[in-house]
Image 1 (cartoon, rainbow, N blue to C red):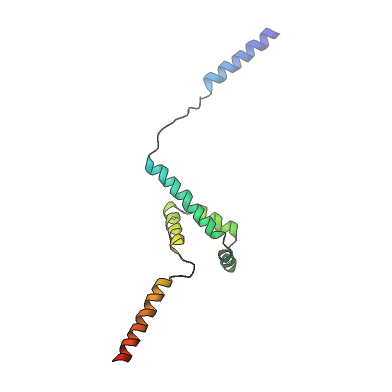
Image 2 (cartoon, rainbow, N blue to C red):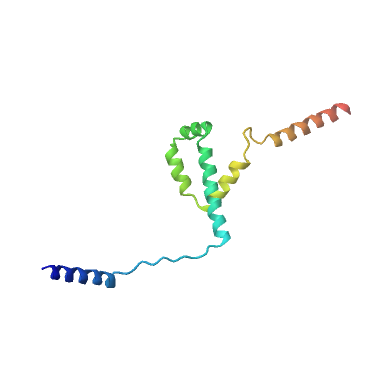
Length: 119
């Protein structure tokens, strides 16, 4: 009986090894561009997620009826180009808006008024 069990076990193991495909791992080099691309996407998503955690952003999301989880799902579904653009826009945005453009406009108006009164 022991010989029969051993024989059947050997037969099943050998059949399994021959019949079932063996998974092979393929290792290869990735280019620097591919590595940077993945790093840029991860950094962009991290920037966006950090932005979404701010209290003022949370309030605005609630006003438009969007939950934090839904916003995160939408960020995850963005393409690489969209993540890059949104991340760049967030980094360029300032807390007070575009104060530089407003300041230049006000200074020009004051200068024009000053010059008109002088004439």
